[in-house]
View 1 (cartoon, rainbow, N blue to C red):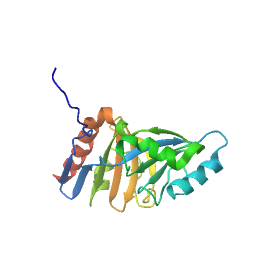
View 2: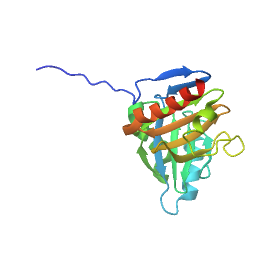
View 3: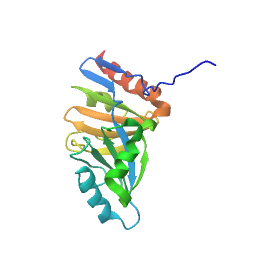
View 4: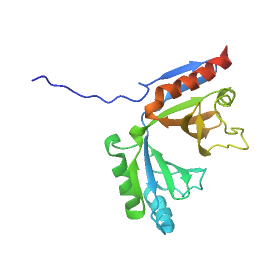
Length: 191
């Protein structure tokens, strides 16, 4: 009987490219875990985030940074956050968050469901404004801001993670189409 070994692949096979002044790179080494707050559990959840990840609970649309696992807590909606972090064991990301938060949250590993692209460099906002309906100006969208939107009819989470850097997350099922939309927008501006 033939032996078959399975190997994992990232949604975009490690894509990395610089077009003009804009660098686009897949981020495949971060875990993404959803944490939902049980009814009437706000205080316990905030305390668990502080104790378990060293982070404050962000408001919806904002993010905070913890002092464990390089965690960034994304305020996605009133009773849910996404936790983006460097997992000690990528196959047990939900277990890492569950150990940190205990019974104060319902956790679900989202890591394999999303493709992540970092777009960085001078001119990136000009490229994004062609496909993104959000106002990404410094005042309207400062570092740490996060929002859900659509780009080219695809669902996207947009996190501004630096002065000239955004982390874009889109469902894995449409990762190639999403990459094509971003790459084409950047190419159109660099010609």
